[in-house]
Length: 71
Image 1 (spheres, helix red, strand yellow):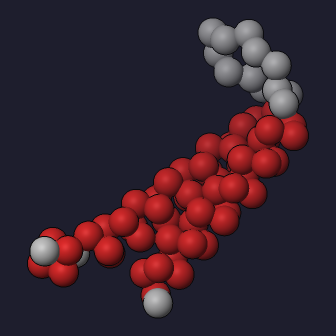
Image 2 (tube, one colour):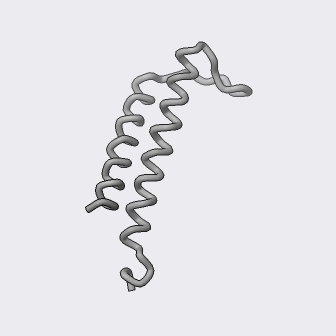
């Protein structure tokens, strides 16, 4: 059943997409903070450690998904 629906490929694609979204989102937040801008309408604290950690986690998840597609 998994071969018919292609669930293995779908799972690898979803992992790559989620990882890439984490990389893009945290990279964008780091870029906006370096320019001195913040989110409009929100008063929050920028946490560089959290942003870097989640960026690295996103890279790992994205690489994991891509290797699942290639391998």
